[in-house]
Image 1 (spheres, rainbow, N blue to C red):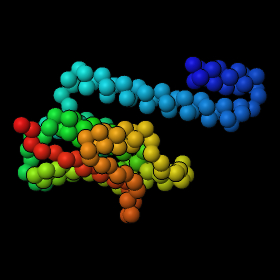
Image 2: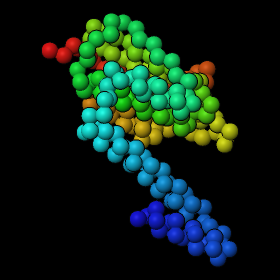
Image 3: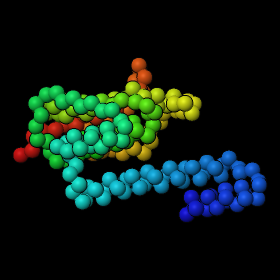
Length: 185
């Protein structure tokens, strides 16, 4: 409702030839961003319920979709690939999915790499990009935890794992998650 009211106020101000207050534009933009994030979250939740073929066994489909959308992606798997507990499998997939979505949205022209590393008791997931991200052509923007990063951190923490995300020293951005992952019984 706030988004609708802000949009109407902006429209009426412009129609009357008045200057639109910057605070009103900020409210309209924040509302639109929140609505987009909510749609993304709901689509993820719905697809979990619908059994959409998520999990690392379907990673190649996710990567192909990213490539078809114009994002060059490489995938590297090290260690002995094995069955994971279903909740770890899904969380790892969703973190890669969100990280690739963030590269597409925020990195500018970029290439991404996904690295999965299996050890006997853990799985690590790393997604790097070489994009401009916070230093895109629209000017420097602070890099802060967006809702996608918060959601990724919560997914990892809920399973006893950890997640770090931030700019890389040589440019680009990195998302790194590590999960305890014993083989399912």
